[in-house]
Amino acid sequence: MDATGEGAGAQLLEELGPANVFVRGVFHVLDPAHQAALAANLRTLVAGQGQVFLAETNFPGSSLDYLTALGASRHHVPRQLERALQHLPRPGRFGGAERQRAFPASEWELRSEGPVNIEVVPMKPEGLPQQVPGYFALLKGV
Image (cartoon, rainbow, N blue to C red; front, side, top):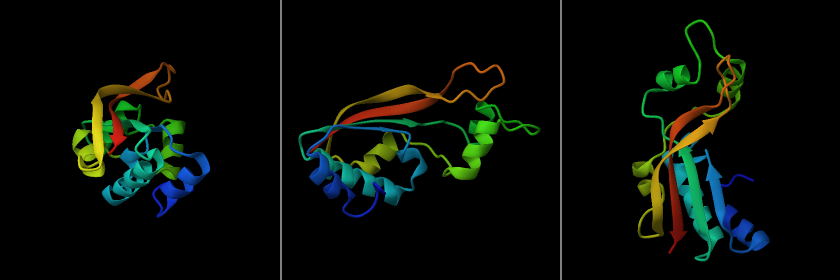
């Protein structure tokens, strides 16, 4: 199911009932219109009873800086990163400003927000865990 599609929230609500939702790493790859559509469907799904907890990457640099932080260089791109670049949408950032746009205060109560480290698939040769700067928010539909 395309969770940004019209009626997706209502369909999920019918199948699941009011729900709590955890979203990790989705909003930062959507354009603003799809972010707003997903937030609207989530509002329908939580039905005033559940909450949405989201955790998104919020890398402060450019796309090139982000790729470098993940282990890419002029001469080498880690295999996992190369596959992601070929098959996934280009990542952006999602922080407080983007959350305010997608989850307007007239429709959502912000319960908590702040910085967080997001663990990503290790891509450097040593295979050690890697983290990128992120953002979290806990929201309740009003």
